[in-house]
Picture 1: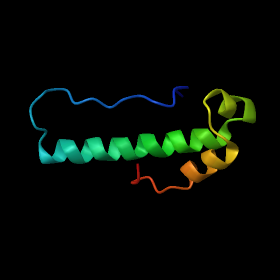
Picture 2: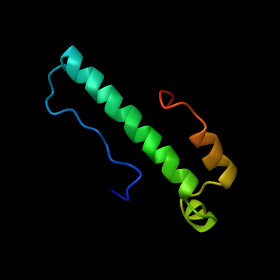
Picture 3: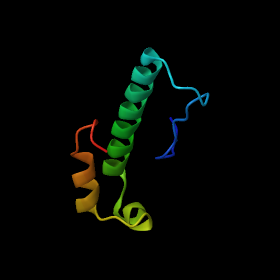
Length: 69
């Protein structure tokens, strides 16, 4: 399991992706977003403080649906 909360998803080429590729990319972003939000819930108060958010902020972020940025 990776410990980073942010791992950018990059496009392999500068060309416009095909429809299937963009759908896969979107699904990967959604999956990543959900993992990051769940990781926020597992952080203790010290870690949350280190990244500058409160427990309430973390809970509000984690409550968002995966498709919302």
